[in-house]
Length: 235
Image 1 (cartoon, rainbow, N blue to C red):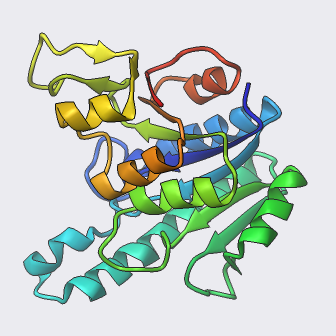
Image 2: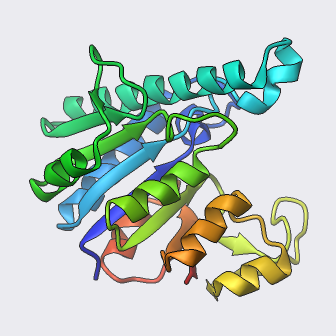
């Protein structure tokens, strides 16, 4: 069904049950999900969040400038991406390329769109860190931006413990109903918090399909790549 996909992973996915930090078991699960997705034959790029290390919106709590806080958050995405690269390598993947929006030459390649495309066409897994290198954005916007830049057929929006988009918070509302399919306009009209609004509008303007699903569900991303409906599709 799909030829090229971008998978968005949050820092929370690496932290596991804890709000911050790292979980070795979660890292192994995520690495296996990425490998299984690539095994379907699709080209895979992964953009990694850093909220388990530091969140830029906590700048006031730490008494630092928001730009500096976002810089720390971007460095957090690098830590997570290096961890994921290491676990992928330990599981046998020797063709993983890590690219960063901010040059960190001893650890990764700088993100260059045409180079990333070459890696994908050769079958390498491409990990993308540092967002888009700019403050005042979460990794939602860079995830959509990179998916469009790289000509991805869809963006897989991995959630933790939530298997799609609901009309209310399923953690607090027992009657919350999950949507199987939504249009971009329905998401806007209903005020559903799928992702940052700027990121969502960018996806809408470029007709980028969004699959919102639970990364905790084994092989969910693989099923999506193979054409099985999982979670909520927005297009």
